[in-house]
Image (cartoon, rainbow, N blue to C red; front, side):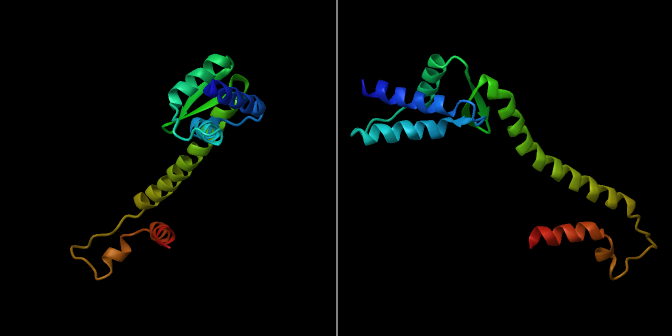
Length: 142
């Protein structure tokens, strides 16, 4: 009886979020559920996130689970494409930046053609590092 009441309150919260274009993290929904159970005087009742997710999916047919970085989130069908593009943008932007940096460093490293005269000069180690790589390492370590 108590869990049905709390689940209905959680469903009200989920319905309130409809159209916000935000994904609903199951960790947050589970915390809301557990906090409400505790507020009603039953702090020892623990809930199973998977069962709550499955129950929400059963009761809200146009909501879909999405697995994002080892965490489950729920999104409404009409918000799914937006949530997926947001997820892709946030993770792929960082990867794209790193990929571009690697290409710049690689290109400059290939363009450097050290001349070997049969012996090493005293500054050969410092001269073998491209200036861009040196600048990048200084930025990284600062």
